Length: 402
Ligand SMILES: [Zn+2]
Image (cartoon, helix red, strand yellow):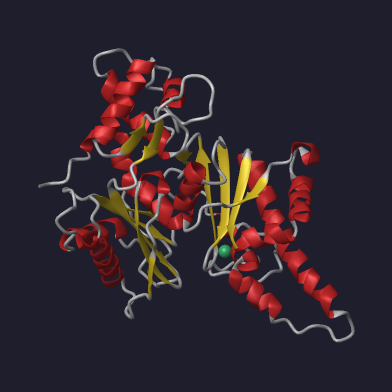
């Protein structure tokens, strides 16, 4: 299911089905940009040049990658064939529901997003109606595309349980807790007309948006190469977190790990949706900053000084939350996105020192805190989820009919 799966583990498997078992790991390496040439693929898979050649030829025949054998020019030594994802190859439909609307895009391999479309949420926001709108808008994209369409996945702004796929505390939409979103979405996807170029069966999946954003950053962005990647994000509303360990999302026993929004960072702080005071959610999300900005300035003190105090306070609270997470999780990189990216940009040194001061190993063991890089990370991550069955088994991609 993950890009890292099998990249090393399966490489030494013995002969008979060797070619086939290497296809998934090889495709994952090209997909994540780790094998831009055939010699890089040979090294990464720890196989012979002949085997890497056969594997890349098979992925090319499946229409998933391109193999360019023209000399790169200028370089010394024997030029290696260049490998890339096929820009005209198959796509999946990625969708994301957020507090401000619905976003969709077709996503090819390599996390390559076609231009996204943004739609308002349907007026009645009950789950069936909203999921029908998502499925129909996605199918419209699939029908309009000349590319093979393989499946779909949806990012949601609330926790999604595993393996049953129910939405918990979908507070933004007032959906009943326990709504079976995975089943309801699958039903609506089945009813939608995906057009003549869709491959059936047409799988669908649903997951939490912060988890999917972390997957996107790990494979295609600021989290590349991290072994224990912590992502903290403040999206349209609230604060989410996710952890990717050795390329796999750590989702806990039921999909509910890393609900970091409800860490207490100020016991006297603002009330949170969950009923507590001063959660990371209610102290560092966009609503919190608007509320802080609305405080009446003290007429007896310089305005700029007061504004700086507000910004510093938000940075400090974020730092407190991150420090708590660092002490529990010991990540080797933290990626911040959404509004938190701006807090990092505004005061990178202060944020790093607030975290370091409270970490058990202190200033000497600073965890790199970096900005997210993937645009539309929720959609790119949903693309990863929809691509998962085919990254596992590239031979399940069938040629276009006709
Ligand atoms: Zn809370």
